Image 1 (cartoon, one colour):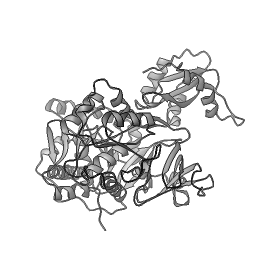
Image 2 (cartoon, rainbow, N blue to C red):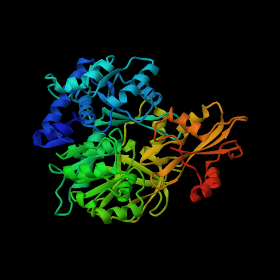
Image 3 (cartoon, rainbow, N blue to C red):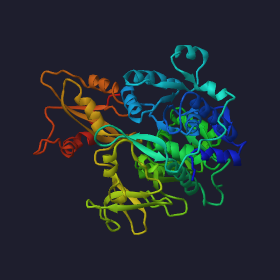
Image 4 (tube, rainbow, N blue to C red):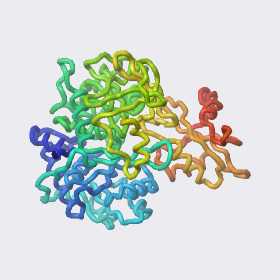
Length: 532
């Protein structure tokens, strides 16, 4: 049996060839354009030596070239290695090496980081550039091929390369609470099925005045497409059945409102901080956003007050869902045909089971807290080159999320708490151990611990509690500047607390729970100084 994630666009191109698929300001691509240009990119990759099954990295912001490149890589039968375009060279180099990517498709903004990362890699990396003008081509003369040339080329593959359902389609890196980021291998079936369910569960069987997803429905791309939420719930979910997507390079409430008004956007998928920003921007006029029919929230818990205010102000409902990179990502969501319970994330999507387990991996009764475990069509193949980590999360045949939740008598689920140490900053996962390793590498730091503290805008902010070596005069500003050089912008700590010694247990292990207790009063009173 052959099944490719790329069939999303080949099928929509067959059914809706002249309908708009991608919109960028005053330019748009029909489904026929999207299919043909993806085939051209695929042909260029093949000419560059890419073979079916080869990993090809993609590091690109929210722009049409991301989508064209994404499906172009799949057209060649290659694997998309989805790189976060906020990473620094050190982080990019690791993911390129670990994934064994043979090349990178990058936009102009990412090229300097890619070139720096290439110097750190033990093997040569070639780069396909998304769109260069003549002066930029001269500036980056070392870049071996130019993707914009591919998009205008007449040569293209005859068809998308056939793949099997269990072949890896996309590798997404997700950090664990310890060690280096892990590459989740998501199959063609994982992602195709998740896109189908997102499309059908989210947009069908709605109230009679709302049409199912299809031509005429438009979603705005403000979630990063390198992330599983944006990739599945916006890009793939909308393109599955003939909807369109319109791009915003970076989220700005005013710009977002303008694009929603201009393109008559019907669907808004976002993290809670985005909904909050739209509520609190004095320059956003809700009356100009009447085309919106409803929204989807994920990435972190949506505050009840934010939800209430948004729905009252914009006159549209928000559905909340839950998932992880390893679950493609959607595992559970609210829907328009079930009662929306306050604080609930809804029920598992079709083809997915969820349960609540205790510490012995035994199911607990409704109403009892425990770990959320998941199994079904959406579960990743495993972590790339990491069988131990795969076995650890796939115990007893269930994917163990590490999140604490409960199920009620009706089968609706609730998330009680996130992973033990995970920080959710503006919808992005920040894993303390990764930041701590950077801090410990500083010669003047004796010990360090990273925790999350409440933040009105981002939900949580990153705070580092640090003990310096004797005689050090290191300032908070200097330490933050150091961290900026080694981790992505959303990861570095904005709040630094200097202490003489960190609290420890009898074994010498740093007690984070004690750190949280000791500094809870300062956090509550807002005495910590936040430095950008």
